[in-house]
Length: 544
Image (cartoon, rainbow, N blue to C red; front, side):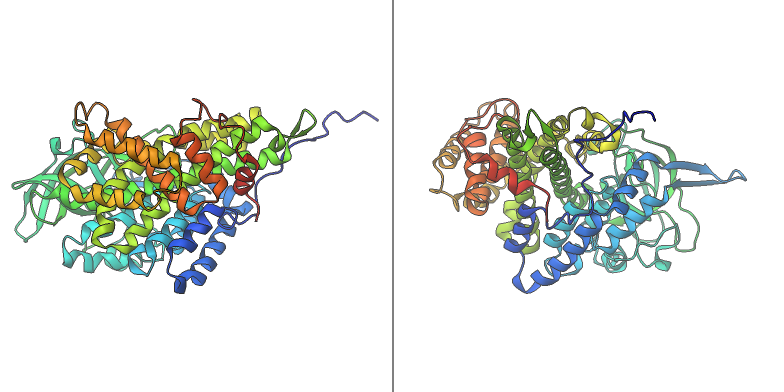
């Protein structure tokens, strides 16, 4: 009998069949910290159910299939009629349906909705990130539509529905709808005031005919879109439905789908308008002010998405290291690997803690919290999303050659990792937006300083970082050229303040020593060796 040459040993089992929510201690603690105690039991039950579903073998398979079978554009039917439809793999619809039913578009319609949704978004998008785009856009359309109370009354119940109603039909005939957004044009990019799409008023008040293009239209299979176009009174926001009330298709020509680095399961398109019907949202000439409410909400989702991806990357790295043996012991017990894992875990926990603090501020909606968000959102969007790719790269390396293989899922995380930094305004846009807030809205800085001041005196490295930040804010010379440096410091001080107040001492100590105290190298795995790194790593381990 031939000898076996293929006995498999020393391979980590798949990270499957676990509760993604309960295994994330930083996330669980954030929910318990920020949510009204009367809502806590219900929220825990919801998130635990979602966490177990996310960690199931079936849902992980859906995520893999959705990415292996990207969407396809059908511009015409068999008879030559334009249909402009996007076909998705069934797994995409299953994921999207679960996300909608879990309330990931329903934050505006229930108490504590933003915090509960944020936690659910972090959990659920660990299964597959691409379908988070239509969930995010649909959620974020609500505050923009509220610029027109009549439109909001008509559309908000559909947008916040927990029913995924697939297929293009008049919105009035659907139990739930999805929304996308069209701002970017070829010549403008982030400079939306350079947009050339025109809007000509029609006889019916508030209705227009749009002619032009969008170079990057999110979720082009959606039921409706918020679009910017040049009306007689200037740049204006419009609601563009895919199907009109009489059942006819609006002119919405999808020229092609983008062939993207990552985010493969999600459709992003180039679209043309030619006599396309639209309804004005807000006043003429106030388009940026109207749609900025949507952009602000999607920027928070970029932070949530990056935190989700980092958490999954770290969970995979720690799980692998807990099972893989080398040089006479488990990788997780080796001092150098433990340093790497602890460093990654710090980055992930800081991202989650900050993201959930922002979500809690959305639920509060008081003047102080709105001022805090004005500075904190662009800072978090800039810094947390920038940290995502280095975390994904280092976590992949923890798996060695296994991590470089598609079946591990790590390459998908790596390809996805730059997305949230680019979407909804890349790094420079966020930095400049924060500078505008500093210059025009002094209450925003005051709210930020009050927030970080809550931890003053608890850690000398944090105190020193706050002092240095104040000195930098007092020096306006060359402020634009050093805006990234300033935004980075604002984000790190905010993260440090939150961790000092809320995280275990081992986590806060390690973060302040490295990120604020300067005892850190230029790569992960360079934390001071004297710290309690084993406790930090164990806290990040995905067991429940």
